[in-house]
Picture 1 (spheres, rainbow, N blue to C red):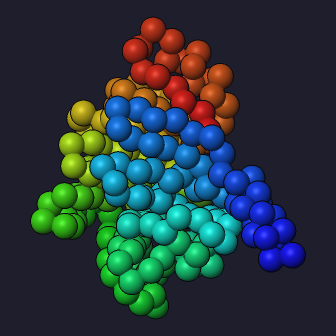
Picture 2: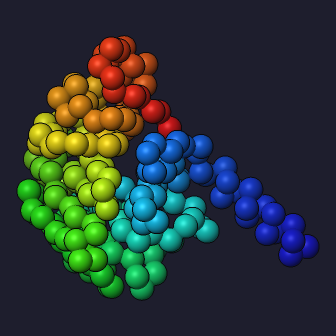
Picture 3: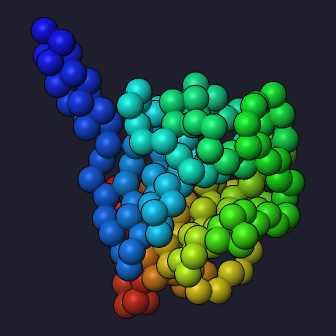
Length: 199
């Protein structure tokens, strides 16, 4: 009976993980409603939400707004997890916690992971952070919402963006749509050399 429950738990978790892709050493997948990225052995979650029990533990978690999903974070944290987010989101948390305002910079692990916050906004006046993350020699860029105008950054390997205009502006090697249809991205970016990967 115990083995049956274990099998059911594995199948449930597998159903919550969507097949992703690997690009130049960057592994990207969906876990629950979140993006999970592995770069040079470092496990990163962007805006964790809907995370199932048994999900891989994060080395770094990046949160955009004050109304972060704390329950999901508890499922992917241990004493070594670094959590970065807005002050209101992280202020009552324990462990390796860092609050970032808009357009700030942090460095971890003797410069192995570097992050710049990017001002984002949703609705009217709900301000938060997107992130430009460098892990080793790979770079990620995350903008969650369409209201936001991304800051120009160079040499982006994989960008998580809400609309194709931002991708055309930033020129990442790969873009992952965070909102809308991948067909819209593909049509808008046709001939640009930017790969569109929907997960």
